[in-house]
Length: 343
Image (cartoon, rainbow, N blue to C red; front, side, top):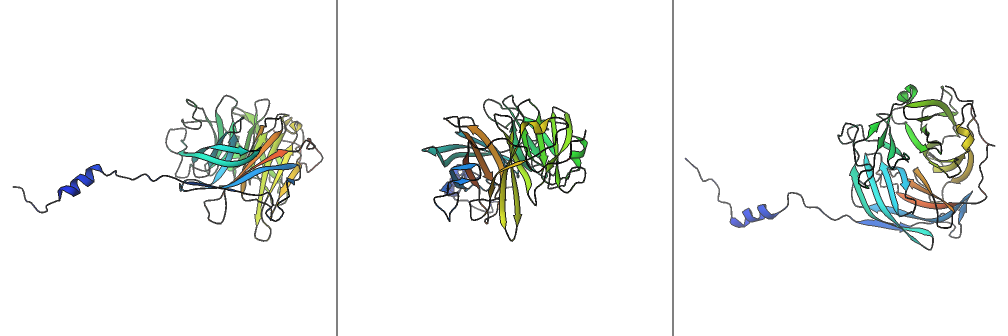
């Protein structure tokens, strides 16, 4: 026997049928131009870097932020980034009179683990990004320390399940929230991976650095400077490497350094030395700088991009900045060095 307990109006039935289960609201992007130094609007250079424009990017999608690894296409039109919440972020870049002015067409998608599952639940903390030389990308993760290799499928980067590289044994013992944050492919096909917090052989004045290819790595040391930690790396055409370093304390605020490692720094047995190219500190535009990328401009100039990780905090910003490397900036080994590498 059927019991009629409630009469539902026909209008409510039709509304339920034709209303989507989850309304998709359009996302909005707000891009605000920034200056190198808001207190000195005529300033156009810091160290060996010449200002070529920058923006503060805000996006209504709550997944946007935490950008920790950066790649810029050779034509400068496409940005690829990874975030420390396990997302890949792509966008289009706009320019006016040679300066970076706009970021549009932002797309966000979840990274995948090597077993095909989403990179989340403790597996999500992507920190660095580097082309692999075959059209794909290597990405390093901390917390669950690993480096994986993503192929590019049908023009879409970082979309497929990756293959996992074998790390050196000492890389597995890095601090939980202080793993490999700087990763880049060298001219000879090897990669360098630099830890944010791990000390090389217990030396407080160094950070762990590994040089390798495939599953074969050797350990060496990266020279630490004061309270700065390496957070990103990119290889220049002359085979030297740029590294961005970041520091924060309550008194001085957030600061960043861009340093250069000469190509000879990666030879077996050589000491590693850094040459400081630029030092960013308040009142200059600077935040939690974690990503760096390079490309050649239309006139052959070397362009350097920096991106900041806003930690999904309302007190921090996602800054994307572009500089030109001054012609006077030349590789040098006259700087802070470390003991010879160990095998």
